[in-house]
Length: 312
Ligand SMILES: [Zn+2]
Image 1: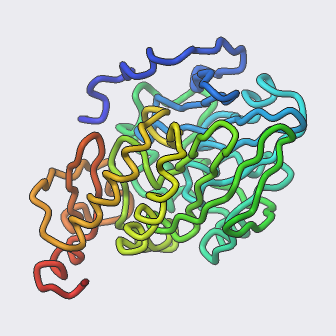
Image 2: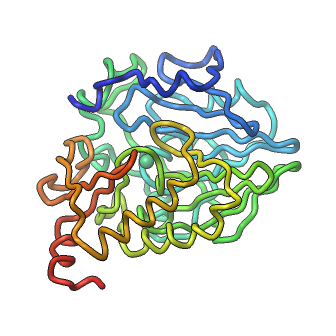
């Protein structure tokens, strides 16, 4: 399986690893600049990252991981004060342990509200609990057959909402594209942009179209990245929700240009799409295009529209 090549990843060696008792053989924790802990799950294909952003009066947990092991035990070991839990978006790999917290701040979107209300059976994860999605065997405490995303209580937020942590505040930026409810959080004090799944160094998904993942929108994605350009000169670092934690803000510009290239001309950087990326879709109907340090997956029909000149 290709995704396992190079695991464990070299990039983790750039960061200060924090020794924790409640790792459960599953979580790793790193201390990042700006009073942030990254809590990652490097043994699953998703290589997802949650962030505990520390404030003087309260702290913010951005996403709750896959729910394969207990992230709340990790968070409780790292921080004992008040915590606000926020979702970058509603996809399964970021909401697995939501139900363990009293309430979760989510962007006000119909797909996100439906998942919060109803949860998601394991079938809704497509191929993501298959054996070859795990680096090693599943953790002993985890039973894939019993897995489900449990419903959770929410508080709805909009673009421009601010989370006040005392000595720092985080602004919600609505960033539709990957999903309609995707948000980023911008920390003006430390000039950190938490990008969720809208940017990371890996395959960016712009192809979803189902109840479980909502609808991606390639044109919205382009507008989102383009709209972030004016903030770029202020931003010092991107903290990403998959793969390597920190990316250079120049990637915002590069991603905007990449989407423009996909929308305005036929991109010439087509790659073979890995099976792990296909979730519930037919992989043959997806196209993946490679760029500098990231790729973009779109539906084949988008590309057909481009060649027929029907999008722009
Ligand atoms: Zn994700």
